[in-house]
Amino acid sequence: MNSRTVPCTVDLEATHEHFHAHVDLGDVQVGPGDAVTVRGLPSRIALGEKRVFTSQAEVAHAGVFRRTWTKFTGRFGFQDLYDVGFEG
Amino acid sequence: MYPTQTALPIDPRSAELPRAREVNEVTRAAQQDAALSPRFYTTDFAALDKLDVTPVREMWDALVAEFRRDPNKDHFKRNAEFDADFSGMDPKLRQQFIEFLVSSVTAEFSGCILYAEIKKRVKNPDVRELFGVMSRDEGRHAGFINHTLKDFNVAVDLSFLTKAKKYTYFQPKFIFYATYLSEKIGYARYITIFRHLQKNPQYQFHPIFKWFENWCQDEFRHGEGFAMLMRANPEILEGRNKLWIRFFLLAVFATMYVRDHIRHEFYEALGFNVEDYDQRVIKLTSQITAQVFPVSLPVDNPAFWARLAAIAANTDALTRARERGGVVGRLQSFRLLASNAYQLVRLYTMRVTRNAYRADPRMSPVW
Image (cartoon, rainbow over all chains, first blue to last red):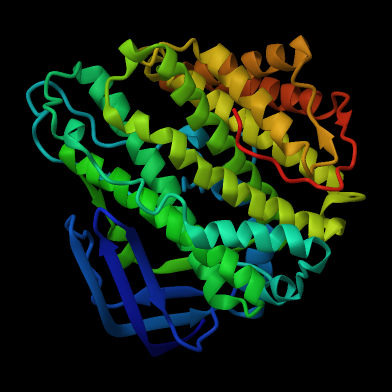
């Protein structure tokens, strides 16, 4: 894997109004099989907390083999996809 | 989203929820953790950019105007009922309710991330706007549930943030079939619970269920967005893709059926018979999806339900066989898995209903 460190913007919110965790890597494109590790992230956010900050992310780009493999095997994990709208 | 091992729900592990840690009476008041583990996706963003909503432009603009109006903007406000003391709730029901909330917040949170990711990566202004407003709604729902979890002393553990996030891949059409169905079945589940509790208020053990009526309008609207996208790009609904549509219909229905039957006690606490609840939800979803899907599964055929019931019974027996272990347990497990695979193939090959093409596929959430 070819890895590099890039700046990123982290947007965390766990208020009553919204609960989300987004990481913006700017112009860096993430593809199938890539892995992204963001530094300095907490493992929980207290209710009412809202934080937007810049950090560093390590982006490991997959090689051709892993990319193809991920594209091929991705379809078998489709069950995760339909969990976006109904509770199990 | 729940990490799964198998493609179809023939294995009970695939139906496992991200359980909040077990509690007993003594530790009931102690804080519980519920770990979220969303998956991260990439897709063919260039293909999403090429989607063209021109064939449904008028309907699309009306839907987007509704999203912009944001009818549920002020819906998710709590009232004094949420401040009530729920410590007297039966411990078993309390645990089941927490599991229900945890799986709901997982679904909403994962939807928020998936939709936001797509919005960020596509340039097509129509697709961008749709996914942006859907992400807004899902994050809002997640916030509402997260607050309720806090009332029950459950903290959502986001350790996934600190780990490496691996990106998997789905073709756009698979995302459409799965999320469209997921949104519409989500609507059907919430509205079925809401209408039932309207008639049987004695089962309303928490105020959150009163919010379901307006809440599920968001899920319905999201489904309409996907319906428009698919209709505007009809190759997604034609030819060999019909076989994929059948596959996704069966996968979603069977997964829900098996999961709900594992957790039948929760539905009984709401005053449902789980079989009756699932049949109502699946039949309603089937009716709704005829708006764009060219085929529907034979949900009025008793054999359809008998096969699903056999899968649920096998799945239950599989759990016991695995607990038993040893050679006998393994042989039993193999037989049960083979039986489930057989039932799923039989279900998949049942004669489907062909749906008439509707020039205007729009539907209103009138149930």
